[in-house]
Length: 172
Image (cartoon, rainbow, N blue to C red):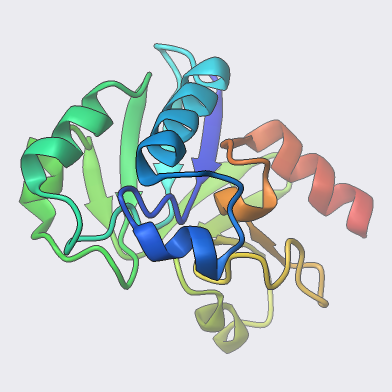
């Protein structure tokens, strides 16, 4: 089993292609590439943490979101982002194992905090953090403690825990 992370898919969000210069000709193409890329790396027994901003609610309904989510491999855990508007149990009902606002996982480096907005990491002066929210603003923060796992800086694919640890260790 491999652990993966991703963020800021913005499924069905037309304007995200313009805002982030995503190289897709349509929402349909973007959604298809995000699903294909996800399933190429994430196996059926793997777990993926989604660090927020799953979809654009004014451009997709819960039926189509569920259809998209259930076509993704593995177990799925959601850390809510500012665009995630459903109630927690609605996300569980469409295919997420659990839903959180903050989550901590253990790694060989020690605890890694999972959050959508990296601003919360400034409150704490220790540890490592994974985030979304910032899109292309940075991949690794200046203090080398916050890694953006969003699709916009990770070739539109999830990133593995092994790669996360490697990035943090090389940055020391």
